[in-house]
Length: 220
Image (tube, rainbow, N blue to C red; front, side, top):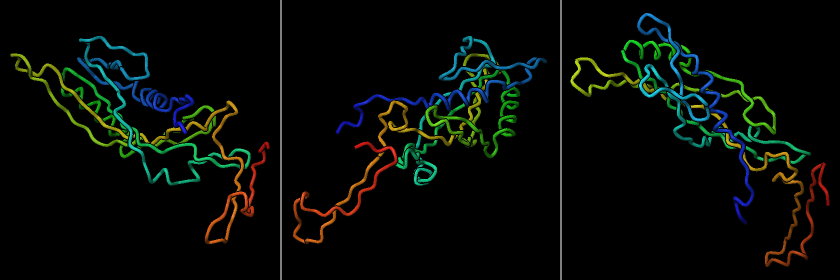
């Protein structure tokens, strides 16, 4: 049996990344007496920043860790179709890093204070994270940690720039192949069980049928 014989892609990670970018794109700070909105570059978005323009911000997806505890919640991770039930998604904690580079430390501090106020300890966002099922999901985004660094390269008495890095965890889901609308879902539609009390075993054709359960839309 081949695990990857049929292609599928639900775009969950791209969708979560775009959601995160939408939440962060309106960040504002005061720089040189003016309120500015730093341009944001992120995977899945169309924004591009000028190389030497500061402040500038970035958002990147850095990895995903399967969440076994949330995956074991069978009720939340199942899809019922025609009486047959399928485990159609895997819970995963997606890791994101938001960065911003500024000319002055005060500018980075402004951003950090706003992020802590908005995300601490976490926020919930309602999103439709998979098109076929069309279910609205409540997604939790947790603020994990942050760090700030400065760059002193060159002969100047002041740093060239300051970098703020903030790490988040987005508690989302990755969907399996069976979530599809092409009529070829991997959904169990019939279960047959045969039972034998013979300790020495017997041929499958000689077993007595014990149970035969079919879904509502099962076709022989």
